[in-house]
Amino acid sequence: MRGREKERFRPLSQKGDTRGKERGFSLLEILVAFAIAAMALGLLYQIMGSNARQVGDLAERERAVLLAESLLDIQRAVPEAGLNESGQAAGYVWQIDSRPYPTPVQQAAPNVPPLHEVRVTVQWGEGAGRQFTLASLRPQARPLPPGVAP
Image 1 (cartoon, rainbow, N blue to C red):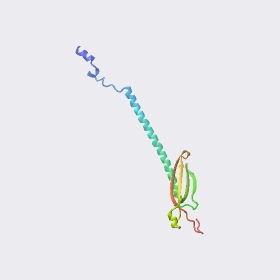
Image 2: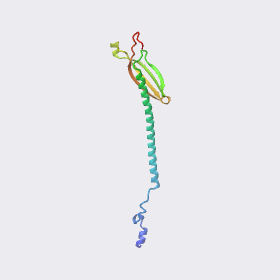
Image 3: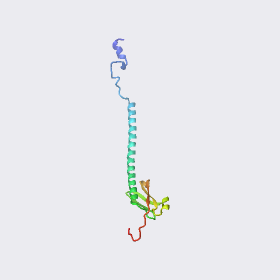
Image 4: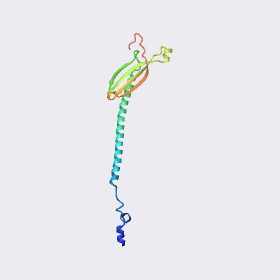
């Protein structure tokens, strides 16, 4: 064969022509890239949705804790009969109760006021699905001496 005919029958990769080397992406490669991108975006969407939900739950819990702390702070001393109160505030249901908390000091020193364990429970959410309980010790209120107005 002559030189020109030899050049004509040589594969494209061996010729000086670069058009055969610049082929681009195949359809399969593009589909795989789109599938990977779709999975990554789906995972990112799921993570962002979960984080937004957790931020909302955290804000509700923070309000419940503030309510429980405020209710407990009101009770500086416990009446002799104890506490058993409940109510609602801003979509939260709360309950305060107390029970005597025995200590060895009470038996050794009768002039020391007895202690009560005060528990504040705050519930919120659909069907009161979430709950927070705060407990503390408070002294029993001393009775006022006769002739002293409260």
